[in-house]
Length: 270
Ligand SMILES: NC(=O)c1ccc[n+]([C@@H]2O[C@H](COP(=O)([O-])OP(=O)(O)OC[C@H]3O[C@@H](n4cnc5c(N)ncnc54)[C@H](O)[C@@H]3O)[C@@H](O)[C@H]2O)c1
Image (cartoon, rainbow, N blue to C red; front, side):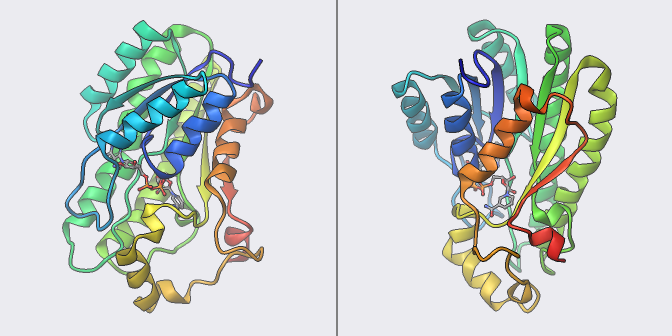
């Protein structure tokens, strides 16, 4: 028996980076995954978002190890695409138990004023849309549940730099903490827990893309940011996925309203 055996879990931003690792880790523990990803570019994002081929590849991989997954193209800015994926999941897998609100973008470069709104729309409003789509289904199922929001160390400290996209990244990642705390109170009577995880740097396209690396290296604020307290430059995606898994599992059955850093001591050091 896996730690999430036969539990249905929605993962947004599933086709790339951390989302992909969450899907792998949750499927290994027996979850049935509803994998949603935009699978196309947003103009103000300076690195590539995932493609339909990458979402298909994820589905093939999980099915290849005997896991249950359905992949759907959907944009967290568009609530109807989320509701449609969840309707189909209900038919295919049964009632929804969990949510990993993971989809996010970072546009920490200058000269992209639209980045402010795009980052807020995806990272903050997108999390709200995701949870709002899930709540009626989770409540109707009457089996409790667990919602995990992927924030950032930038949701607990004033990092992000001075660009429109950097400021909105930090604002959005703080904003989801407000959502998390309020939903945790609202949903506790339904036995639905809500928590956030706050990773330090992880080597995904969001951080390793040349444009982003060059910008960070040359930015007077970002290049000054001290590294993690522990002597590692970055954590692995699976370290974040393991925290997500724990928060979804019964092992965390009385943990709600918590901001959990997975950050090698970064926030504590501020
Ligand atoms: N990589 C890091 O260092 C780091 C650190 C802290 C927090 N985070 C957070 O982790 C989460 C995952 O980031 P990542 O590093 O894996 O980035 P990534 O770019 O590798 O993956 C993000 C995924 O989200 C998808 N996506 C983007 N916009 C979407 C939308 N509107 N609707 C649906 N899907 C969308 C992309 O296609 C991509 O597959 C984000 O919320 C990010 O802010 C990342």
